[in-house]
Amino acid sequence: QSALTQPPSASGSPGQSVTISCTGTSSDVGGYNYVAWYQQHPGKAPKLIIYEVNKRPSGVPDRFSGSKSGNTASLTVSGLQAEDEADYYCSSFAGSNAYVFGTGTKVTIL
Amino acid sequence: QVQLQESGPGLVKPSQTLSLTCTVSGGSISSGGYYWSWIRQHPGKGLEWIGYIYYSGSTYYNPSLKSRLTISVDTSKNQFSLKLSSVTAADTAVYYCATNGGEGFDYWGQGTLVTVSS
Image (cartoon, rainbow over all chains, first blue to last red):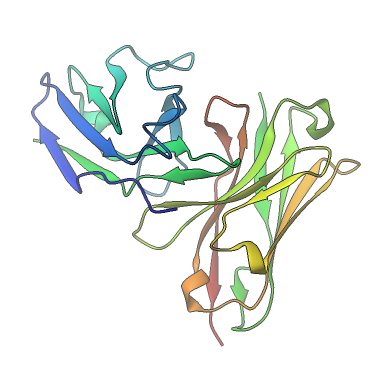
């Protein structure tokens, strides 16, 4: 059960968009539509922002969107705002009632 | 809204057992529909799923920790607990409890730092 692979960092200017990838295998990301994304600000607990690949919990702005193709899932943050600067983690169901998280991506607003 | 709060020692000696409890408020563990989870984050690192328990007592563990791990539930106290035995410095981390209703880990505790050191 290896961690899902994310780029260590991503950046964008206010108003721009940034897309973060999350690469797994056919045993996790590619095998199930149970990919979720979390936003974590320094010193805070993670917050669920996307579940089941592309669904947003109540209260999460529609600037956040998710997708999946094969073994890779993606999170896009559109119209970047200062408060979007945070760490982002993906997770996936990995079968046998197990979950795996991504390595994390630090998003910087330029 | 469900709220979770971790509690337990912040310092554990190597080879001993790390024990944490998560107290749930705003919802009942016994009501079903949620898996009560533990997740940890090593300092400056990513998240690691530890395992979870259903109110019935069914448990599911990360294979890499399974031999040292016990997760239990006390529905009368609306709490669930984590015990990790034979700890080393590699178990130093912020430990979070969280809920998973099948849509991802949606409610989280604030996290508690556990340091393994003599």
